[in-house]
Image (cartoon, rainbow, N blue to C red; front, side):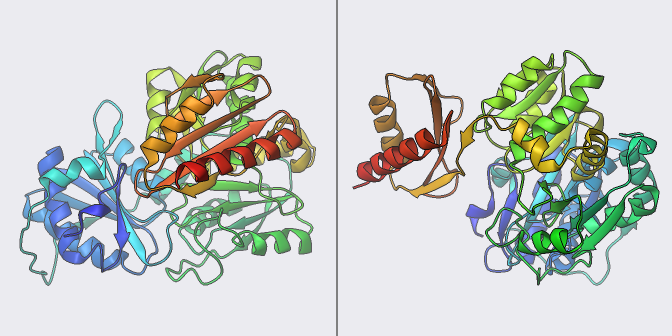
Length: 444
């Protein structure tokens, strides 16, 4: 068994060389031993291996005496809704999120006072080398949650307040189209659909909207249709990205601010969670709008935890995850979609103008640097930049009067991730080169 598939937050690997049916069976058994769950709801995305993994995973769950309830091919947030709304005590989503088509995996949750993520690394100790004998049939209950789920999502906004617009929505050949199609006739906007047909080969572009070239198709469509803006989803639809009228991706921490302002207007004084590599504009605007900014480590699980512990109304991060108190504190691309439709239509300005107002600083894209001895490099950075204000919430963050940076190690690769922001573009370019050169020098 390949133990590297047990990640910090989930289980994920290439099928079948890293994650195969036998391992899925063992994970199903281990999940029940770890959680003590009796009723497990299982969903799956559109990846080619998802049906086979469902069968093997379910066999493992059943072998431990628990019940399996299938909600079919759905966005990940449907799995969260299923656990939060019905008498299931746990859930597993078969998905590899935004990873390439060769990958698949499991996101796992247990219902306690809130939703607890069952981390892959924590499950590993329960996994045993048990023999998997494929069964001909499985005693699996099927449940259709679509009606209740759609009503739940639509409850977040007053649809009558959304003004007519033309919006391109790219489902990336994942499962977002299932949900958007079911809401489409209820929305007072024209939805121009792209890649709504689920296809685990992802034939039109990568299931990761942030990869170079992924947004080329929606950019062309926005321009040819003269659309007001666009929205892109990843494969399992838990990440959403705003695309302006020019076809340019809006940075996710700017989208977070659009959402935060709306929720703070309705929930004055509450907290908004954001992660350590978001722009410094995020806490500044949240305070300006009467909210309480909560800074967390990178990773959706950490943002969600910050939300729960600090009377939060919503949270988000640069990966495009946005979570909401009234959605069981879990992330939802569909809640974000509806809220953005409302916010943008009521504002009346072009999306690029709205984004510019919330982007007062020059922020570079994350730089990934291959470094074998990550700890040594971080210690060298701390010493080199000791004249700045440092904190160690996630890696090391160093703050100066007119610029700041964060360097954090990858959990799975010999890589350091560098984020820099400055008051001016010239300073950003200068400091980024300076840091990249310094980090590369420490690696020699």
